[in-house]
Amino acid sequence: MVGLQGAGKSTWVRAHLAATHAVVSKDHWPNAKRREQRQRRVVAELLAAGRDVVVDNTNPTPEDRSALIAAARDHGAGVRAVHLATPLELCLQRNDRRCGRERVPLVGVLGTRARLVPPSVEEGFDRVDVVVG
Ligand SMILES: Nc1ncnc2c1ncn2[C@@H]1O[C@H](COP(=O)(O)OP(=O)(O)O)[C@@H](O)[C@H]1O
Ligand SMILES: [Mg+2]
Image (cartoon, rainbow, N blue to C red; front, top):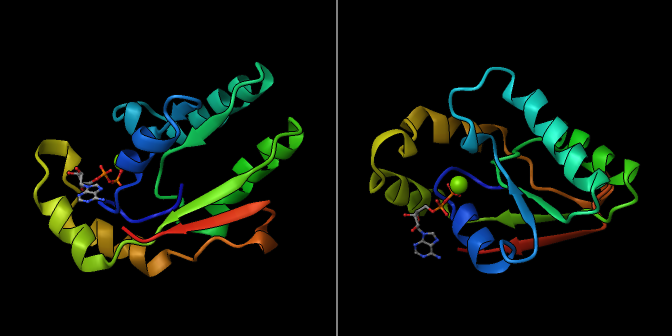
């Protein structure tokens, strides 16, 4: 998954992938140290066990995504990007309606938007889907 905080990634995952895929997200371990390494290990373990996996994070840059693409390749899995390209204003409205630690500071959303590079097949994805929320 690729998209800003509040874009609707987790909602889309629940509707379209949760029945068939193991859902991995750093959001599941808000207090863990080395969450990136932990996520990579969990993804590799699931792929090794033959599971389909969806990684539900913002994944804004090619650098964020390259290890996931490599993990898929290592296990002979196809790899697809689903970009939730929801307009910024809508992401901010949805984020504002959230409670507690689910709500991300404004600078967090703006920072992700500043870094976000839309995913492309040139990075190694077999398929890129754009969902307009
Ligand atoms: N298609 C949609 N239309 C209206 N509201 C939505 C839609 N998708 C998600 N939301 C709402 O927006 C908020 C953020 O959605 P979420 O899926 O948690 O985003 P993300 O995982 O990208 O941060 C939630 O309150 C969710 O109910
Ligand atoms: Mg989410």
